[in-house]
Image (cartoon, rainbow, N blue to C red; front, side):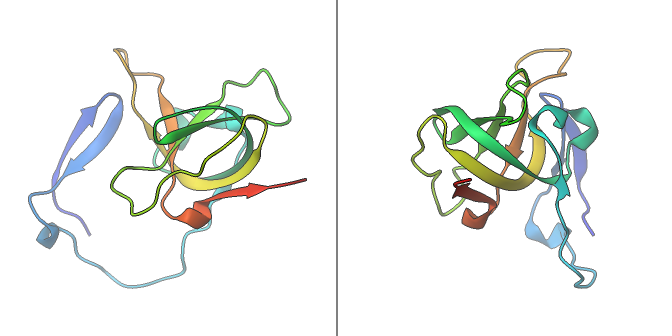
Length: 133
């Protein structure tokens, strides 16, 4: 249970908390299973969802890797971000390498009407795994 204020920032709904006491654990349960998607399917309808997909490195910038759809070269690559608040950094990558990703679909649009800027935020090192076919 969470008690806080909600506000949209760059197209994404955020919850603002004054302190950790505004979060209560109800009970444990089965861990969420990520929804399998394709890179080109990541959009507003999946915002806030835990997803998994395979992608091929098309580039990188700072703490992010851009992954394209290995089966659809026309799909726009998706930004996969390792937040600076995590205790690990994104791996060194080369163009063409393949990764399997698990993460939460997020949004950070650059300008109104705030309908772009979708990204996937990974949580743990095991959420971003390099693999070979």
